[in-house]
Length: 245
Image 1 (tube, rainbow, N blue to C red):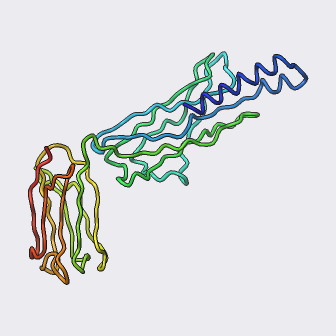
Image 2 (image 1 turned 180 degrees about the vertical axis):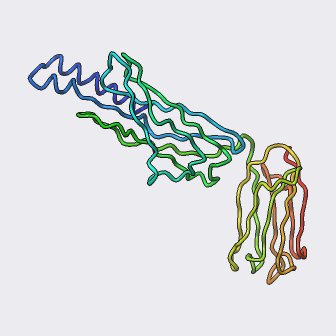
């Protein structure tokens, strides 16, 4: 929105200045044809839900008829998976208006939990004398509606032997990990889990749990409350059920 305000303020300033000091360049200045996005921003979405967010653009010249501008996603600059978002191919600014908007739809389950996903949208319309702003960058980020659950694994000396998973009450695998390098000291991650009962399972391919050359451990916590604790030699596998209130 700041970019829209800045753009419109600039247009008004030019108009006021040129009205006071008219010269041969006045028609050219007032005839600038500019279209631009608002400032970059973040779209937060529940990992288990969807979200729709309005994106605005502004033009320097109102028209007596609708104006349509083509949009496209810059694939080279976009890091989000194409399944995580939906962007229209064009936007229409209504007649006699200088502002228009379009909706970006986001699928929470298809966004990386890293928070680094971005989608970059640009105006691709080509017209003589049309000046276009830089593309807009939207950061797509999972936002958990409840306190996040923290998993921390302290490995023994052989992290490559460990594989883990978190299952819901229907035995559906929600989160998993493995393939760690030997010598890795520890691993931690956050999980967005709604209220319910879950099972944490860890397996060890060698069959000595987290016990050599030193005992390792697994803890799951939420809001500082410990929900799972597994330490040392548990053989080939160990599992614990836990509940998110």
